[in-house]
Every structure is written in C-alpha cells, then in structure tokens.
Length: 471
Image 1 (cartoon, rainbow, N blue to C red):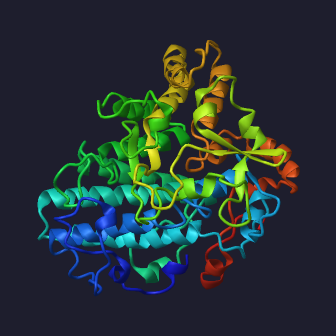
Image 2: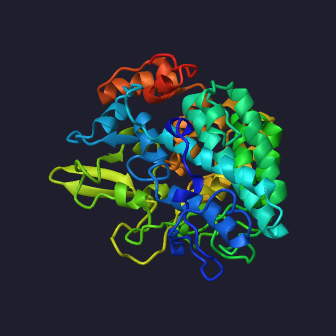
C-alpha cells in the first residue's frame, strides 16, 4: 500500500470549487490552492467538493475502466477475453496467461488503498464537523461509507485477506497486517447499513441538496445493491433476497426493454454510474473494447473469447446487440458492444455502469433457489431471459436452476466489473475451469492464482504484510 507509507496532504489533489452553480462532475475544476484538512469541512461547498473529488479521480482512473480497469483485468484472467497475439504489453500478457508476479505493478491494490486513505479522512472530517448543514452532512457521510465498502469489496475478492484500515493515520496503516476476509466483510456490511440509514431514495445533485436525474452519486439503493451482492457472496441467502427485493420493489428502477438503452446515461435500469470527466470520450470501456480496425498493440488489445461467445443461446438478443464484430482479412473478431460511443468528441450519451437492476433480479433468483423457492427463482431468471428474447427456463431441480442462473449471469453481465471471475471463485469452479482454459491460452494454471499477488513494494516497506500463497 504505497499510499499508506508516505504522509501527504489529502486535499492537495482533491478537486474543490464552489459547486452551487454546476450540476455535473465534469464541471468541477481543480483548486488553485490546496485546502487543508482543518478547513475543508467547515462549509458545505468545500465538503461537497472534497467528496466530489473522489468520484472525479475514480472516473478518470484506471481502476474503473480502460485497459487497466477491473473489467479488462478480470476478463483476461478468466475465460471472457482473448489477448491479441501481437500485443507487446507485458502486464496484459501475464494477466492473460495467469502468470502475474508480485513485481508487476497492477494498480488495483495501490489505487484502492489510495482511495481508502482519502475516504477514511473524509469519514473522520465529516464526523468532527459541527458547521455543515444536516442534510449535506448526512448525504456525504452516507456516500463515503458506501465508497469504503465498495473498495473493500473488490480488495477482499481479488486478494483475499487484506489490511483493514478505518483510519487515515498513516503511521497505523504503515504497519498493518492482513485481516481475515470474514472480518473485512463484517466491516463492509456495517458500512453499507450505515450508508442505507444516512442516504435517501433520491439522487442528489452536486450542490448536496437538490435532486437530479443523474445517477452518479450513490443513494440508498446503491448501498442496497452492493449489500445484496455481499449477502449473496457470503451465502446469506435470506439477506440477499430481502435487499434485492427492496430495490426491485422500490419503484425507482425498471428493466430497459430495449437492450441498446441499458448503458445510456438516461437508463432507467441504472442504479449507479460514473460520469466521464474526459471531455473527449463517453467511456473508456467503449474506447478500449470497440474494434474499429481489428485488435492492435495499443488501444485495442482484447476481444471476446470463444468460451464466452459459445455461451450464448441461438437468437439471444444480447448476442445481437451487445456483441460487435470486425472482419480483418479472413478473421472475424468479436468485441463487447454494450457501450456504443467510441468516437472522440461525440455527444455525451453513455456513462460507465457499475450497478444495474438486472443483477438484482439474478441475485434474487439465486438466493431464492438456494432457499428452495424454485418458483420465485424461475420467475426472476425468466424476467431476464424474456428480455433477451429467449424461451423461459423450465427446470425444477435446485442444482440445474443454480447452474442456469450462473450461466445467465455470464451472458448478461459479461465484461462488467469482474462478475465472471468472481462468480467462478465464489462457486468453487475456478480451478476446474481454468485448468482447461489457461493451457489453451498458452499458460498453466496454479490453484493459488485465483488471488492476485500483493505488490512486492508494499511488502518490502511493511514486513508484517504477507504475500498470497504461490507468489
């Protein structure tokens, strides 16, 4: 955790302005001077700006999207994406071959702990503040509690036991040890329940008070969406069903009937999106995924694997609408086409999707079947299948239905935030699958490699930080 070993001024890189006159994250400009921790939470505008800065850096950071983002990294690690044979990026090569080492700068660990340091400082600053208006303080506290849970969710699923830090004290963090995964999950659940209680049903604009149609700041249902997923991953089936049901019945969201509208910034399915801050592009995922001239060594090194393509049933509308193709000589390359806008300077129509309603139906379907509610599970599964133009699934066996739901998650959520990689791990199928897939990629699989390596630079600075097995 490189950021945990150096003391820095938190707010020297936060983007702070008076936000009362702007509604978009992209309208927030960097401050002319840094704002110290003592002063940033004394009034609404600077406090809002401090938290807004987290989203800006998250939207514009490799953790969220692009070639170094979680979607591409986990897609290459699993059986979703194929790496173009001519690519020269050694880190992408190692990821694809499941051959990472602790010497590789991966970015996910480092960036996550950078955000967590910032988030913890915000939690502390907001708790101490006595001058913020009540509504703004509650909103911001709910947002940063959610953000802490979000970053820890990915850390614990990609790395296993991880250092759990709830303080901005760099001295304490610099010597922290790895915390048992179960304890990290307890903190995640605690933060999400707090976030639910602090946030409202509404999406709040950048002034911290007024409502907006933009779904770019977390609300109560964003926290609920992650909590439903956490309960699913920890096998709290009743909890997962309850939380997903609350979202489905909230009356705020609905499934888009047109698959080409799902990833628009006006999507009624969106629970939380990231607004782009680079004015040249809608999303980095579209820029990275869409093949205009076939794969190449630079901006477009990946395409969809045959494993994923063969998972689609005939006439699946998702195959028709969410998969693009590019023919080069005698070869045809297929690519993710959920995001359509890849032209520089195109009108802003798409935001990066993080949570959407379809996942909640699939969470509830799985949770219901695990509780022997076969009828309810079938209803939820078929809700997703019907939208995709497929016949309703009819099996009544628990094992068969669970398998069908996992398969449906594969073709519904492909290349979105690591769902396939994490599903294989939580269901205990990753070793069986990757023992087949990795050799076909040109590598060999080691069961330890379902967890990523902790960066050696962090272990060197903190000897109490132990490496994952196999590295």
